[in-house]
Image (cartoon, rainbow, N blue to C red; front, side, top):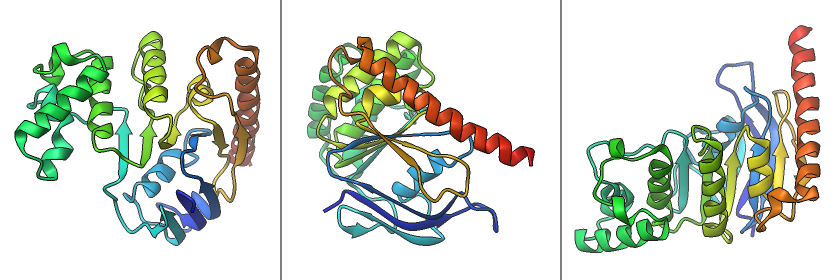
Length: 254
């Protein structure tokens, strides 16, 4: 059974303009994908469709064998802006989903502190988001999502606002924590996509009917960033993006 099956998807914010038209795509359980493409091609829209936050105008989306009709409890979503509650302490932000599910407060705190310790944040458990660095806030956001044990993890530019070293540190952390979790990452960062994703979906000019799939089996392995294979894969993805961008420019230019 596929984790995600998109069949003949159509979607657009304005008619008759469309981002996707009869688009199909399959993600198997445990696969880690990155979706990459020119600005405005529909990357984030595709993620929101998979999260159940948008409804397709045509076609179907199936997740874990069930038709997707709205947000599902087993799907985790991590965004660039963290989405933390400013009036809640770090551990309370991590425990938010547990609170919504009715887990008693002592158990919520115990589980939240355990996750903060795994992410190296036990010393800041009682601080508020404004007292944390950007990297710490994103770690709290990751813990808040993973504490719910999602079977599907969706990420929209999660590290774009961070400096290069912090970004790489969190990429390593995410790769280790989510090695067995089905993941779809939307990013503009070629190196990030190549490091984290076993398969990359390169999108081109809307309306999108299909994307180019690039295989990347060494993704997430220790030291991968320093290998010749990594550099070659990044160059391959860049070439695919340049071709997609050229098609967009040619179409806009008439």
